Length: 189
Image (cartoon, rainbow, N blue to C red; front, side, top):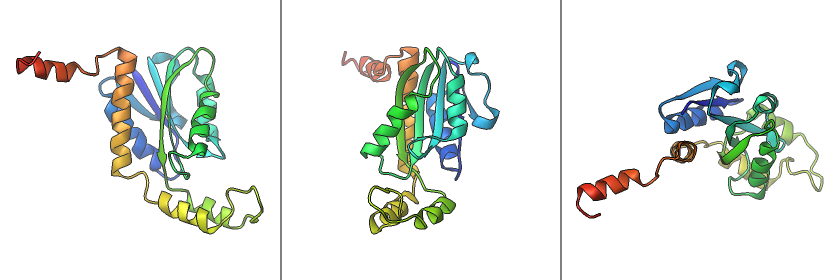
């Protein structure tokens, strides 16, 4: 399997996650910054790693995603919100809409990520009005503080495991082949 792992990063978070994801995909996977990403037509799988900007992939990632047609694709991203929040799942759903025609999205993965300090300063200046989820409140300040420690080692390990599962889906590998071989060698099957 020939795979491109393409990432866009603002704080360096996504580069770490993309490296972990590339490791999990194994042989045949190559990693590229979105600014230097090759023609997606060369690959069996294109995995895009991005940071979330107002509920959408960042602009550079969106532009690249639109160039991908007729490929198996996988989205992975970091965001300031909690990873199991409704906002995180909405971002995953929204990201899928940016791929070009004929793409088969085989999944997505996301984790919390530190927010750019410049962005936090901008949000602290926003008015605290009903409906503004980005204004500085005790709740948002707590969420920003929690996000600052991510991605952590656990997140990176989870990204690697997610990529292993993606590889099995794309290549049709038996996810239990290793276990079956072990059990067979032990005479248990």
